[in-house]
Length: 547
Image (tube, rainbow, N blue to C red; front, side, top):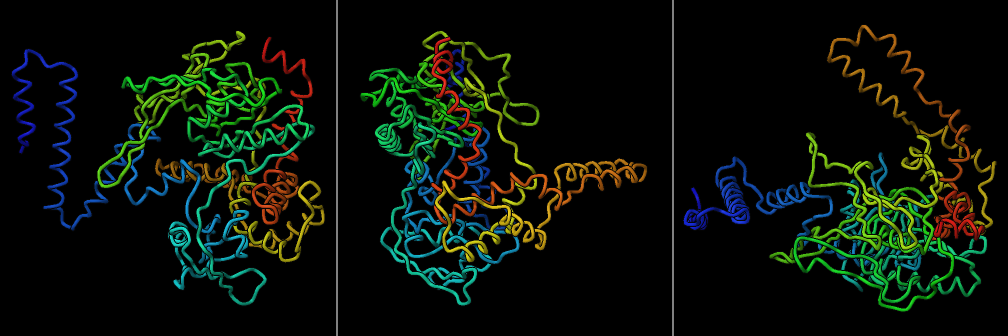
């Protein structure tokens, strides 16, 4: 049965000589809203079980958002803290990363944040969380434990843990406070150049980058390396501010264009730079997205920095928030952004989908050539292409599986019990004797892993069975399966150096937190080596920017 509103709208359309496309669009909108309303009402009245209207509608809203793009998201009032944490990098809690390992009854503390309540109270990585506020956490999911650790600032929470090497459980009383995740968890001097790791584009991150850059210059940095690898982006204005640290005031950084007139805007730098001439390298990879691409792309278009690494993710879309009834919020894509050369680097066209429903990638053959300020050719679509490509390190299966398995976690717990302190990061070495102990620990554990090729073979066998061909190829399948089985002892030898890297980083993290992890990883970082190589050769640096 149609609603009165639908009838009135249909009557109005009938009185017009011809319905315009806009009117037709509006009618389709009203018609389908009417259908949705009626469908939910019928479900509520006639479905065999009582439905939860909130859950049903939220499921429908989320499905609708997912059909548009991954960045349009509905946040009900209960999830507003998640949105706030994304944009500000802040939340109220104890400041610790927690993790659940397969086969364990309790969630463990993976890493307490430096100078935050958990670390200050004495909680350590490796602690199993037995209870919070007296309530047992046995069998509880990560999200449940996290929700109980968070709360209003200045409220107290008791946390009972089981610590490796300690017989009795330990109880700590912590005072929650605003946890501000550091946007620049590490910066320092490397080979005479200043290195800055920017983790996220949250509020005031440009101020943190500026402070780090000024301090490094005072320490005598001959050039700067800004590391945006793995940085998925954040606030657009912070990206503009960071570009403004290195280019003249009033420089155009980007333009946004959307459906509504107010979405068409031009953005310029608003402050005087800290240095317009210091040699600058920006490191990126395939996880550098959004605001990271604004910074790297704008500095490339302005010929202000050499981009080193791999092609970036390719997100040229801008999101805004709109208030919804009952304190909800809609984060939605409202525009595309265009960097100084005039290009948009969006990789995927979400308006075009294949037969399987997947959005279509824009092929390189359909991208266009633009020019930087100095006339260098650059392309739109498909992210930022580096000026100096660096091959991404591949991760052997054994390394990935060790990093995900509890065996590494347990070994590091054991190592920390046996080593009260370790050398400073610059001097720390995971020795051959240490590795032998680790190898024995793994071989005597329950650690097992299956190769990707073995998993693929299993799928082929299942298909062959459905097609009635499995018996005919049984011997060949069995022979191939035997050859595809991993040899743990052999792999621990073959990939010794790769395994040592992840073990040493896991150990250093326990003693020196996130800054220690980053510093340790830089010791064997090929991206950093290439960046230093570019800066060490002024003629090469200049020829890249002004060929």
